[in-house]
Amino acid sequence: MDDPRALFDLTGRVACITGASSGLGRRAAVVLAAAGARVVGVARRAEALAELKDEIGARADTVTADVADRSHIGALVNQVNSKFGPPDIVVHAAGVNTREAADDVTEQGWDATLALNLSAPFFLSQAMVPAMKERGWGRIVNFASLQTTRAFPGGIAYGATKAGIGQLTRAMAEAWSPHGITANAIGPGFFPTELTQAVFDDPERAARNAAQTCIRRNGRLEDIDGPILFLCSRASDYVTGQVLMVDGGFTAK
Image (cartoon, rainbow, N blue to C red):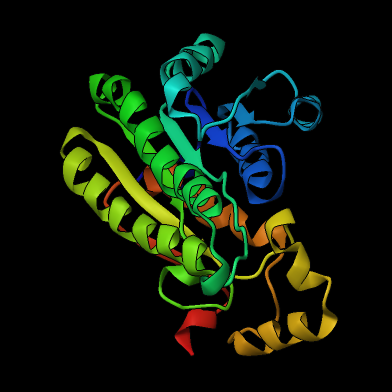
C-alpha cells in the first residue's frame, strides 16, 4: 500500500479559488498551496490579493476580476490559464448576502445575489471543464451553506442561491464525473468571515449559534482545512455530487 499521505499531495496541480481575498476563500488558497498546489486567487480587491500572494509566495498568483460579470468569463479564464496553465481544481468561494427581508427584496439585490452565488460557479466551471476533460481529472468545489436546507431571517435571496448550489453540485457531478471530474460542495456553519461579521458582532447571537451545534462552538478558519483538502485531492476520488456540512453539527440537530 502506498503512503496514505500521498492521497492529499497536490504537487503539480493548479487551483483557481474565487473569493480568495478574504475569509474561507483566502483560507482555501493558503491550504491548497501548503499541500503543493500552485494557486490563482481571483477577487475584486487587488490590494487584498497582493497580500495573499505575498503570504503564499512563488506558488501563488492572482487575477483581479468580478466573477459575476458573465460577459468577461472567457477573458477571465484566459488570464487564469496564463499564470500556471489551466486549473485542475476550481473552488467557488466568492459570495454575497444582501440580508434583505422578503418584503424588502429589490430586483437589484436579487439579481446580484444570483449572479455571484449561483451563476458564476456554473459558468466559470463550464469554461474550465474542457481542459479538465482533456486530462481526465478535475475537482470542482462549490460553497453551500446552512441555508442550503434551512431558512434564516433576511436570507430569502441568499438561501435560494445556496439551495440551488446543492442541486447544481449534483447536476455537475452527473454531467462531468464520467470524465474524471468530481463536483462537491462544502456547507460551512458560522465562521468568522466578512460575510458573517454581523453575526459575530453580536456576542449573544454568536453564543446562541454556538449552542445550536453539537460541538458547542462556532467554526474557526482552520476547521475548513481538512475538508477542502479532502475534496480537492485524490483522497476523494470516489466522492462526487455531495454537500459536506462543516458546521459542527448545526444541521444535525
